[in-house]
Length: 370
Image (cartoon, rainbow, N blue to C red; front, side, top):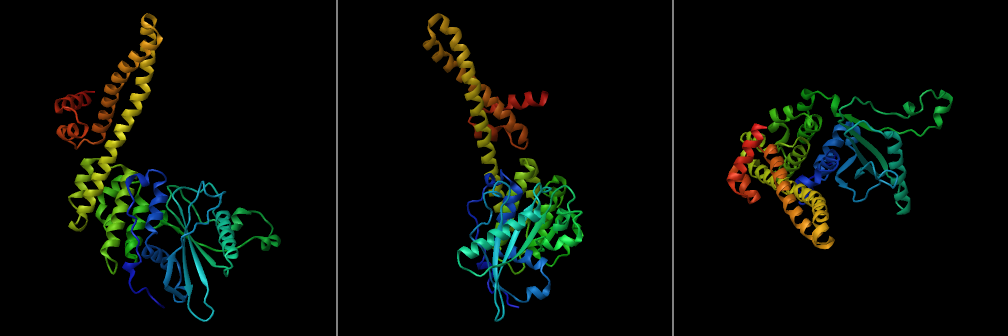
């Protein structure tokens, strides 16, 4: 069995990953970002495959495929990750490992989806005049609802046995993380999967995540590079922040117990989040200003337009309405920000929003008394 000589050289960090990357379909994004690391893909594959198959794979040839096999029908619902590898021996052939991730109970038959993937992969092989690749699907599920592996027989329940040989049949690996016990996960011999499985299993459980933060977010180095572990830590922190929305006070509490090796990255990531939260609050305020200010401007303009003419009244009303809208919009944004970030001092908030400190202190007092 051949092994990769220098695993640290295979990881390609995604330098453009930010919290905004996780705002849409965060579970899918996290899974795909994880699989940018061939080391993660290899652990998933080894977790599934029996030893006999592992021994014929040229692990040094394992690489991420640049293409996608999601067609027009599937693209609104699914994303795929494909890794390709070759086998040893005179009859060497290519294997395509297809990763599919489910964070909720599927609303589309998984077997039908995989069959479509098969067809698209082979269609690409034929078009490029390549030998057909053997496809081994790996479906990962961590949804909140119970879910069992889907088979073609389940889709055709009640079909007479005499007709079943007309059904398309293939197998796939199914990892139901929801059903794995924490103890069995922690006893795995796969350093990366230990963390990944625990993160995916408990990502919706804020209490568990806070109480076990180091265990699930700080990856053991083992034979892997520090760069790999740091990148996995970062995307895991961003993912959990997007799902659970830690406030400053909570983050400061878990930050204190982090090892020094990741504290700098954690602080940088949290500061990035706070900048994003501030920007989001200002965007909300600006939208309210435009909407409410414009409506008030129209009303004011109509009233004054009765005396001074429609055009002059609209203009003056627009200006006064926008000014009032700005004040109200800013206060609403500040209220939202203060409630969401109780750990921030009045001075910090005032400095960030460029307003007087006593104004923030008065606003904090109002919120407490409401």
